[in-house]
Structures are given as C-alpha cells and as structure tokens.
Amino acid sequence: MLDIAWNPTLNTLTRNAWRLSFGGGIAPVQRTPSTLIHEAPHQDLYRFDGSDTDDDRPILLVPPLAAPAHCFDLRPGQSLAAHLVGSGKATYLVDYGTMGYADRGLGFEDWVDDFIPAAVDRVSRLHDGAPVDLIGWSLGGTMSLLTAAGRGDLRIGSVTAIGTPIDYESVTMIAPLRAVGRFTGDRPLTTATGAMGGLPAPLVQASYRFTALQREITKPWFIARNLHDTETLARMESIDRFMADMPGYPARFFRQVCTQLILGNALAEGSFETRNGAITLADLTVPVLAIGGTEDVIAPIPSVRAATDVLTGSPSVRFESAPGSHLGLVAGPKAKDSTWAHIDGFLDGVVAQTA
Image 1 (cartoon, helix red, strand yellow):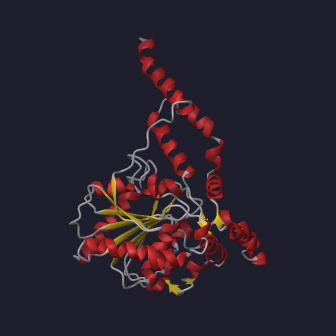
Image 2 (cartoon, one colour; image 1 turned 90 degrees about the vertical axis):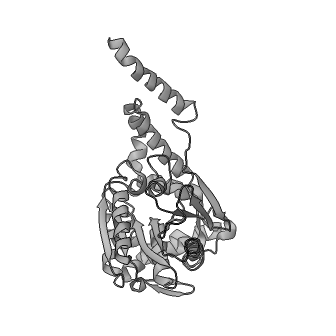
Image 3 (tube, rainbow, N blue to C red; image 1 turned 30 degrees about the horizontal axis):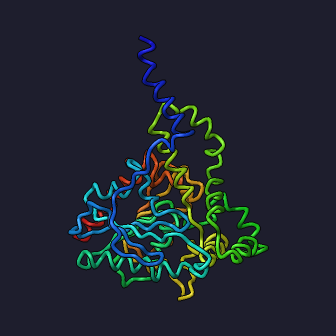
C-alpha cells in the first residue's frame, strides 16, 4: 500500500528533476493568442484574440521599459491579459520591442507624447471613438499617468497603475543612491550608460535579480522543497524566463529616471520635465486606481499611495494594497483574488459612473 501511494509522487519528483536539469523546463511557454494589428518601431500594437471588438470600453496594457511586454501574460494562471479577455474585455497591448544603441536618444517624451498616445488613438478608433482604459505596471504606470496628464486631448477613460512608485523618498532600497546623488548628481549612474547608449539588458537583469536576492540565494532549497509540486515549479520557471528576457534602457530615458525620479523625486513634487515642456500631474482628469504590494521593495506601499496626494485634478484616486512582490502583484499566485479583483471592481465602477 505504501509503495502504491508513493509511486505517483516519486514519478513526479523524477520527472520534474529531469525536466529542470536536462529536459528543457517544467512547462512549455504558453501565451494568450494575440494578433499584431499595427507594426512600427517601439510601438507594435496587439489585440488579444477573443476580445470583443464591440466592447465600448477597450483596455490598453502598458508595460514598462526594461521589461518584456509579456509581463501581463506570463503563462496560464499568471496572465492578467487572459483574465481580462475572459471577463469580456477588449484587450490590447503595446510592445516596445528591444532597445539598441541607435535608440539612445529616446526619452519619456517619446512614450508619453508619441508611442502611447498613438496606441490609445488606434484602439479608440477601433471602438468608434470610445475611451480607452490604461493599465500600466511599474514604470508603465508612470508613463500612463504622464500620458493622461500631458495629453488631455486623448480618449483615455481611466488609469490603473500597478506597483508604480510616486514618492521615491519612500523607496528604501535606493536611499543610498539618493544620498550619494546629493553630492555627485547623476554622473556615477549615467556617465557609463551614456557612453554605452543606455543600460544594457544584462545589467537590467542583474539589477532585478538583486531586488529579489533572498529568492536567488534560497532557490536551490526552494526547488528541493517543491520538486513534487509541478505548478509551483512552473510559476518559478515563468519568473526566471521573464527576468532572462528583460531588455535594456535607452540612455536618455535612464538618465531621466535617475535625475528626475530617483534624485529629484519629481512625481512627488507633482511635475515631470520633458524636452517638450513640463507635465503637471494635477492636470490628469480621469479616475485612477493605484495598487501597491505588501512585499514590493521596488515600489513600497507608501511610495505608491502618494498618488492620492498629487493627482489632485482626478475625480477619484483609489488606492488598494495587495499581497505580493513587484512582479507578484501583476502575475503572482494571489493576483487573481487581489490585484485583478481590484481592477475588475474599479473598471466596473468607472463604467457605471459614465453610463
């Protein structure tokens, strides 16, 4: 009887150990089917298959730079995109692709004045001029907020910012950089990246791994403890693939992050300077949902909650907390019942208010 009971578990242990070591991984990559509907440098636009194009409230997913666009669609069970499509939402994604030396001059203004507005306009026109609800993760939320604040002419219905820091003084992990920067400015951070044309992908990947150092150190023990749990290992594998796919930052964009966000704390002060002029966050006039993660060291809850203080022109700014790390907020095992549920309730409320 004992042998019979243990046999399935032993088979699972053996199979998972083989797949991790020699067999190409625990689970194949599975993305939600989508269709490329517009192609252009750094602004490819996808529509997820199954989206109802008659939906009068389309959604545009806005990823950050230096993260693959499939942050919203890691795998089944870890896909906000699939959840939205399954909820009957017409769902779109803008994909910036990779960054090279030729892109070194691209900055925030290229995204908030050009790439994202163009995607919003295309999506809106596909839905007879309907307002588009933006959902951004991390710096994707920053760019969504700046776009809505700086381009009041766009048909934006709302902004959801997931794990988006506003008050960088509340981000403990960058406190040493801010302390040094008071004396040196941005030079230690940006001189080398300027020469290289940006922050290369390997450095971005290493930096992200550093923010989850405990996970990296304890990973062998985690695998050993969960070798019998195929689903848990598949989630781990999807995160590893995500980190391995991270592209780099263009030099100008990275310098703006360093000078204005990290050192200048510009968002908490209420404005952001671009080559086209200042963007004032108080000029944003659509409903906003900000979601912070209880275990997020990149965007701690106080830094995210600061959105409620600076978005004074919005008719409503709602803050919610959810369990999870920075990536876990949008794609973790608890996201469906926390982050995704907050988004569903927020969007339903926005629709009800405008009906």
